[in-house]
Length: 161
Image (cartoon, rainbow, N blue to C red):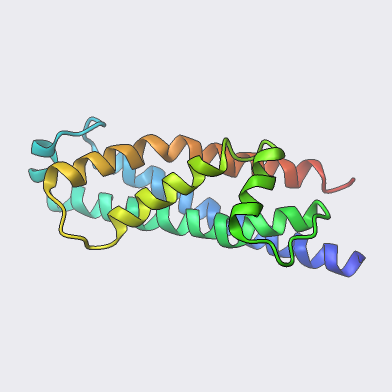
């Protein structure tokens, strides 16, 4: 059992290091964007090449952060808390995280994931739609950061338990 806990601890530490880099890059992208958020469709259609790069970096890093959290850290943290999640579908994992008050709601996490998927796939969207989705995604950044912070707190608060 001690070896299993050590392995989970090492996995969490690795994932937290990776996610810390994603958060750093997200913040750099938002800072480099240099436009008022929410942005209008007109603002979106007049972005400079550098601003488009910042948006691309934001979308990429936001996606990577959410993937790491959803595909790895959520499961690892529940295992770390001695939860048996072996055969649990993602919805049940989200529900458990909600019970631990790590995520605001399973529905909110799912909504953010759907938003992210909408913008990260090259669907033919109107500029007004892209601007609206980006604005919504920008507004969810603090929620993702808060969830991440709670995950790290749960991990750190239970390290020596």
